[in-house]
Image 1 (cartoon, rainbow, N blue to C red):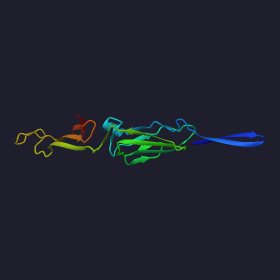
Image 2 (cartoon, rainbow, N blue to C red):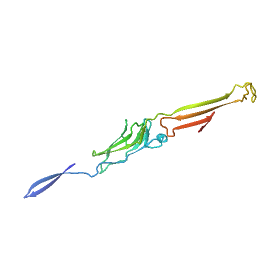
Image 3 (cartoon, helix red, strand yellow):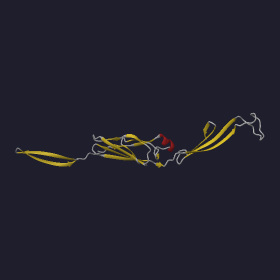
Amino acid sequence: MNVRFYLCTTIGGKDYYHYVTKKLTIKDPKPTLSPKVTADAKTIAITGDNLIWLKGITNLEYEFNAVAQKKSTITSYEVKCGTKSGTAAKSTLTAVDGEEVKFVVKDSRKNDNNSVIKCKSLIDYFKPKITSNLEVNLSMNKTAEEGEENSSGNIFKDESTATFIFTLTGKYYHNNSVKLKGETNKIQKI
């Protein structure tokens, strides 16, 4: 910004003017910026880390933490992660698809400041699939009294049971796989 200084001198009743133009520089005029991002609880449960994101699934809460300087005011906020963007000082970017979050803040004097937060890894995530091995032991059609042997020597019981094992796997799953085993309606993790 240019500032003009005037000097008026009066000699013999007549005014003489002289001026000097100087450039005025405001020290540290740009806004301060300390942004932060927090991945949603689902992402942290799967990846075990706030900065490992799942492409198209992770939701990031962001906050600019920007402060205008020298009596200026913040006039705009811009945040972007891949194709997702926002203009609020604090909000959420849903289903992010980029490896970094870029923050830009501007003030009333057109000063700006920017910052970038990079993820450790952006994972092409595929939902887990469940495979099962189902064993069924049924003895429902009894032809003899309970406890009696039939011609092949089998003892009939008036009950049915099922044993099953489910394995949960995916391209990226924090625990790699989970196996569940149970009988009828009793399920336990193994």
